[in-house]
Amino acid sequence: MIPTPVLYNDNADYTIVIMMIACCLIVLATIMIPKAIRHRKRIKENERTVQNEEQEVEMIVVSSKETIPEKSVISYEKQFFAKANIPARSGKQVGIRKKYHERISKIVRVAGDNEVTIFSYVDNVLKHHFETFQDEITELYNKNNKGIF
Image (spheres, rainbow, N blue to C red):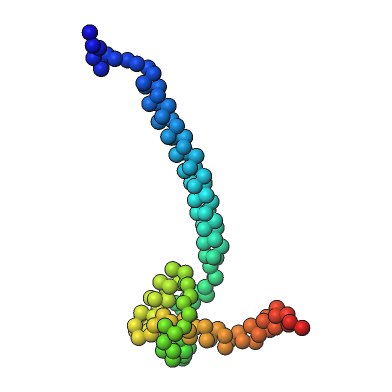
């Protein structure tokens, strides 16, 4: 008489299948666990870097009672919303934090009446910064620049 497969119970066959599955899982675990650990370390390092970069500079808030003189608004507009004399593509590419890019984009779009590019605005801000702090920058540069001889 031939036994039916349902009633057939050979423990050796099941043991072999279970052992093969266990071996496959062990091989996968030895490959994937170190990769997962390295990935988590990279994510933590990136989070630390982002947190260090995102230290905010305190902004001076002008209350609604204090009004900004019209002359300073006009001079700000003339100084920072002027079109740059060079095309943006001839300059170098620079990364800007996403939140600053969004702010600058809104400022240029609204205050600059969509007539000034982000490049022109940033170029004007940097020009003003260098003109304003030229003496301090030169002093720091000379202090930290050790001559060759």
